[in-house]
Image 1: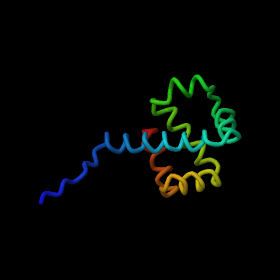
Image 2: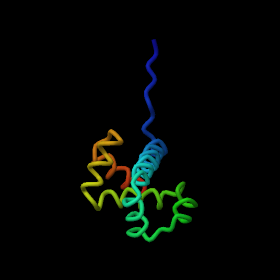
Image 3: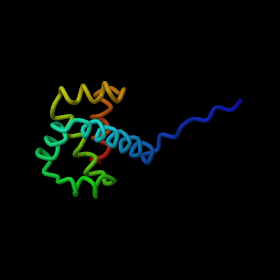
Image 4: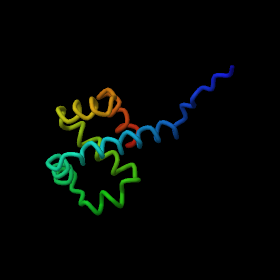
Length: 96
């Protein structure tokens, strides 16, 4: 039996960070008040969010929004089944 090890290349790390950011965005958008707060605090419009969601800077802004409000950070991490530190690490990766 052959065991394949998963590569930990920078591209994989960026992909994982991006996936986590997209999941976090879904979590944020699941609550209208939280979604409105995201737009208000980041200065993004729904169009900017839609058009830029594939961009690291928009994904990083979503994660930064969570990081800056600990109750949301903890709740999102719990719902997404990751540690809050994983969200912080994903943000760091997206801003490199």
